[in-house]
Structures are given as C-alpha cells and as structure tokens.
Length: 244
Image (cartoon, one colour):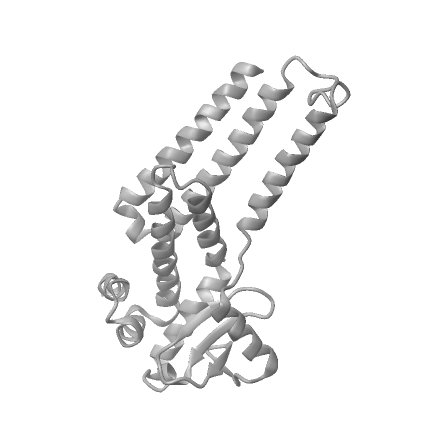
C-alpha cells in the first residue's frame, strides 16, 4: 500500500503542476472556455483526491486494526483532529464569500431600495447610479443587478445581452470556479502556474458567459453591449474582438 500511496501522491503533484501550465498556454481555451473550466475542475478534483487517498494509504499501511494509532497514543488522535480541521478550513476557504460591494447589492435587493424589472424573463434589480455597472451576485439573496446609468446607454437587445451574460455567471456557477482558483493561489502560491490559473479562470468565466449570452441574443448585440459597458478596458477589448 505504501508504494500505491506514494504513486498517487506523485501523480497528484504532477496533475497540479502540469494542468495549470497546459490550460494557461493552450490557444483552444479561448474558443472553448467551458471545456477549459471543466478540465481545470477535473484536474483539481484528481489532484486533491489523489493526494488525500495517497496519504491515507501510506498512513494505514501495516496498521489495519488501528490505522491512526489512536489507542497507542492520544497524540495521534490530536494529529488526526488537526488534519481534519485543515481539510475543513480549506473547504471553508473555497466557499463563495461575496465582497463588500456584493453585500451592498444584496442589502439593496432585500430592502427594496433597488426596484426590480423583468428583462428577457430575468428579474433584474436596477440601482440608481450614473456609472456603468452590471454584476451577478450568487446566493439565495443574490441575482442580477444593472445600474440605471448603464441601462440608459443600451438598446433593448444590448441590455438583454448584458443580463444574459450575468445570468450565465449564476447558472454556470462561475463564482465557485473563481473562488476555488483564487483559494488555491493563496494556499500554495509557490506551485507553478497557481497564480496564472487564477488569472486565467477569471478571464475564462467571462468568455464562457459571453458564449452563453451570444447563443441567446446574438453575438452582434452582445459585442455592442461590451463596447458600451467595458470597451475601454483590455479585457473588454479582447471580449469584443472575440465576439467579432
């Protein structure tokens, strides 16, 4: 079992190191962002499961009756407890925790300060603001929010495209993908590709949401909406070019 455990640990490390390099340097990810995101999720699961199972096999080797030696020494029970707390801490760390701006949006939605309007079948909270703003807030109290400043600038089909883009973030659970990638980046910043993978994930979710919105309302309407809402940023220019 020791050999199998070591092999699994080594395989997990290879997956964790190689996957970010492949997924951040491959051109196909631009055209198939959802496939890239799924591949990244599979790599994370394989890496974590392989590492945990590998360590477990090494620990329980030749100790089938009391694999963690709890009877022999209470210290081992403490060590096991610490390890379990570490796993629990990682699970908590990758939970989607909205920032201050998202909490403000949720409060506005709950209090009724942001009136709701149905756009292309989606309830949207409209907040009074002069600047262009559109965001998707995950969770039960979340939803899609658009500022009046942005809504006033967009034509009907362009506004529907923006809402479809934000709705895709919610339905495809992009916040979870970003949270996991950023948590791994913070937990193991020394792992090659961890930072690049987090950065790539933030871009890929935008591409994936664009693809979903384009299928619903058309690429031209979405491209025009991107140019109005975010045309001055580097990512906005890339998104518009990709849609063109």
